[in-house]
Length: 223
Image (cartoon, one colour):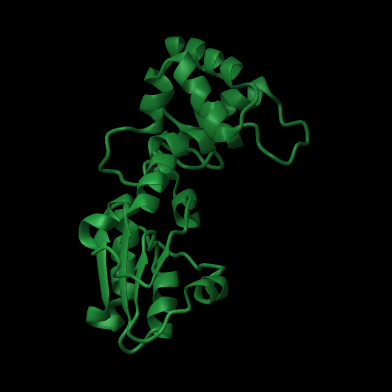
């Protein structure tokens, strides 16, 4: 397993918002490498408790090691934060943290398929146990569905045009890698000195669709 090293940059802001205190109970629905969780546990020591989860198995294993020093004050599970209500009693938490989006360790590992900066399988699953991948979506979704994803989740103004081109291209050759898809998008719209890569919005939209990020957020907030 590649080490999941993530150094959060908003620790002070998180602590200011949650104001953890001894005896408090806090939930971290995106525990990642355990950076925020460790800060919360230290601030609420010695009697504070943290309940953390993440759907990335690598993240959970790294967090277990990082947070082992806190013993029974920390409980971790591998699951999506939309399932918090299934294992945490209603009204039992003094604060909840959700650090949304993709993390740098996920982006930096080519085999996870999140980034077009390096070649890897067109995957993008935060939980590799799920069946839906970005490759399956790109190769099997209808033009209308792809256009909706690119427009609604990526803010892509040329969503339908891009979806049509992808549909034509996949009839010749299936999309399997991040570089293959990114290369097509760059050929369609050369970067020409632009700061944002032509594939940025499409990759964001695919990641959000594959992981049902908006649906997870709605269910998580309800929970």
